[in-house]
Structure formats: C-alpha cells, structure tokens
Image (cartoon, rainbow, N blue to C red; front, top):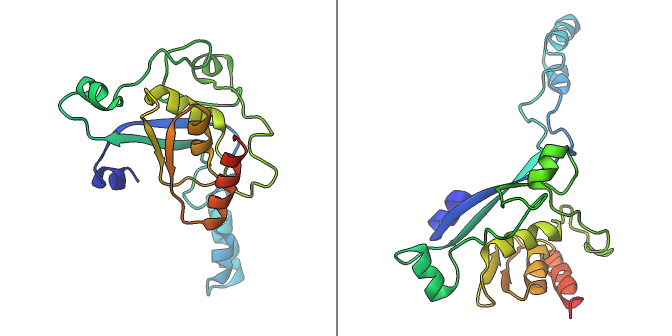
Length: 200
C-alpha cells in the first residue's frame, strides 16, 4: 500500500500503529492437511504429534498500520504550509495524559505506562450506527486525532481511498474539513452517506 501511495505521487509522512490486545488468532492447525496425505494412520499420528502446537505462520495481529501521506512539498514544508496550508504536524495536539503526539496509539486501557503515553478516548456505542454492517468500523477518535494532527485549515482536503463506512469523512465533517472518500463497495458508500447525512 505504501509503495502504491508513493507511485501515485504522494509523500509518505509517517506510519501510525493502532495498538490493541484483543484479536482472533489467525494461525491454523495443519492436522487437516496431514489427514489428506496418502500415508498410513500411524505415520499421520506421528506427524501430528511432532507438529503439535505448530501452525501456519500467521501470528495474532495486535496492531493496525495506518499510512499517512500528502502531496509532495514545493521546496520546503514551511513553503508548502504558507502556500497550501498543509505540510506540518500540529504538535500541540495531545494524547494519553497530556503527552506529545506519537506514531502509536490505542483506545483501550492496557497498562498505566502505555495508557499515559498513547491512550485516546474510547469510541461511543452510538457513533457506529445500528444500520452499519461494515465489519471493521474505525473509531471516530482515531480519525479525528489524525486530522487534528495534520490538517491546518478548512482548505485542507482529507483523502481516504478506502473509506469503508465513512468514519474518516465523518471525522473530517465534524472538524469542519473538506474530504474525499473512495470505496468499491456501493453498500458501504451508502452507509457512509447516511452517517454523513446524520451530521446535518
């Protein structure tokens, strides 16, 4: 994804890591493959015992990467800011217990040290919408944090090329920013439109 963004002419500014502890393990047992092997039952049993606990190489994913990019700056970032009002990060935005912004954040209480440095407020149950059938709705808090960090003025345009059910657009609209959302799934686009319409 990062390479595609670069190829499209965007400059990658940072990669954020959304850290969480709860997720399903992705690894699968190889027993069903062993069962399909054309070998005797004794050998199958022996192989299963040898590989007990060994699964496909898919560790439980406990973070989500978020790539952040912008159009290329002309000359300097300051020049870009003066001309287009985009290009710098607002380091007065705070995270956790009034901490300097970091490229790691979480919305769940993990432990005192992590919460102090990286905690954002939890999403409300209402913000998703009862009608929202998207499987991985992003928390509004995260999108608002990233927009506050990077978008200086109302001229800024927030682009989410995989908008899903529209959380980035909802966050942008709430913060008075312009936005562009793209998705191939028409059902999700309609959900995004409904969520945006509810903001008035």
